[in-house]
Length: 415
Image 1 (tube, rainbow, N blue to C red):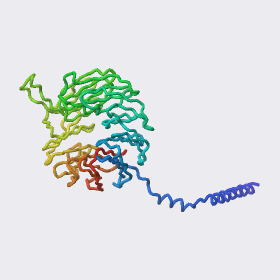
Image 2: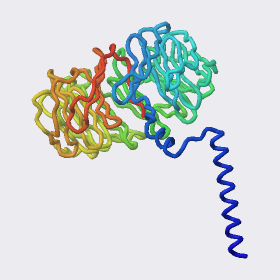
Image 3: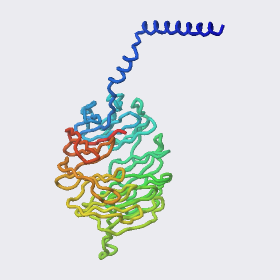
Image 4: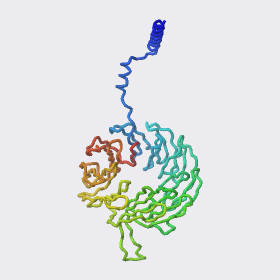
């Protein structure tokens, strides 16, 4: 009886297998070898790695190997300048209008603007743009949510910064706040405190806790984002600035007021300030010139003069200083490695950020006006004025590929 039951089970299994085979053949199923072949021959789907917006209003998507993926023409709504952002797999481009595209280049919608866009930011399905007025658009379809006049004097709004509950705007020497539904909250003109110089412009906004730090060429000010009250100010010619873990690091040139003391010396150096209170934590006096190139990162503070490259840690202690035959004009730090463009011959350098030791040098790069970025195992280099993008090896700086472009307005490496 037991043996008979086993054979009965096997018979059922064979019957089921035969039925499945018939169904599979009727449905056109392939064998195991054909399935394996289709998987091995299917090419990988390339993802866009960088986007380039040029001076003619063309937005181009480039693959990792330097080949063209797609290009979109915005010349019909181009106002000479423009900018874009990539948010949640959607590209938002603003010039004389705002347009939304998928990352495959398909246009979703477009919305004309009352004037040329000078600032753009996107969050939580809302596109905020400054274009003569302040506008908020629905990111899904471009429809207008609200618009308002700008309480700005002395220049157009060139800075937008979102907080959890408000939109901060800055132009000239004025900082203002709107609720996220467009209601004006406060406006503060820093020039009323006799700060800065005539014609000064706020060039950056940084947020820490409930304080916004406004940077202009000749001043820094901290403003309470809830009330608009100025918390602290400092008149200083700011060569470089970075907000790192609540501390404001600056490379400065302090020019004394001759009406107070005409014999007071100019003081230059590095300074660390508690951003929320304005308390100075430390100051290092060192020569700083307007022609220097500076970089401030969580890895350290770096200054390139005409004859040297110097590094400090975040406590103000000098880490190293090395002589330079040609001055560095652009540098970035990635994974404790400095990548820099130097000199009239446009040398591309790699330097150990901890020791100052040169790791490699590549000559005849794309120009001293180059910008640099590291992404996807490449060192990207591009020249905004002359156009052209080059992908370099991170190991030795060798050129992996190069593409020619028009003059570049903005370039972004996709994550």
